[in-house]
Image 1 (cartoon, one colour):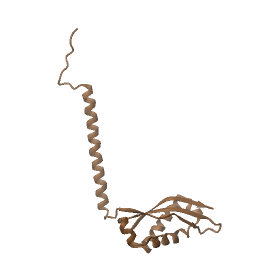
Image 2: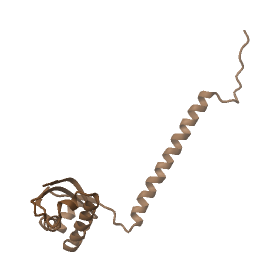
Image 3: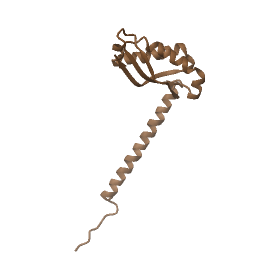
Image 4: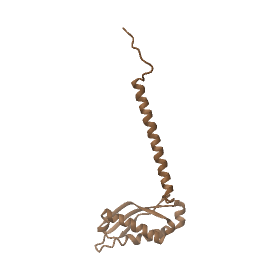
Length: 150
């Protein structure tokens, strides 16, 4: 039986597979590293207004401005551009809740059932908080629960 000669200069298929996997992992890792660094640089370049923390508020339950006794139950978290420790010192939660309640109580159920209505409500809340408690530095409003009952 003749012996098969293997040429050491020719890579074996198994070695090619391992090499391909290692090359893919290396390129993927380098791509992830570049993406992560670019994201953090763009946040710093945007003027330093990156959200530092969120401020969780207790759930709001209130009557809406409808004549037919509609109710709203909404959970809200605020994205703020400062540490949460400093947020409590910057504005009392009672001032924040009062500003939000003023906006929520003017809403109508039909408006809140559409996504455009929810988006407008978020914008109105941010605007009210910028006017009444600007030191808090609210960047965005997150609804953690949202229920309209008629």
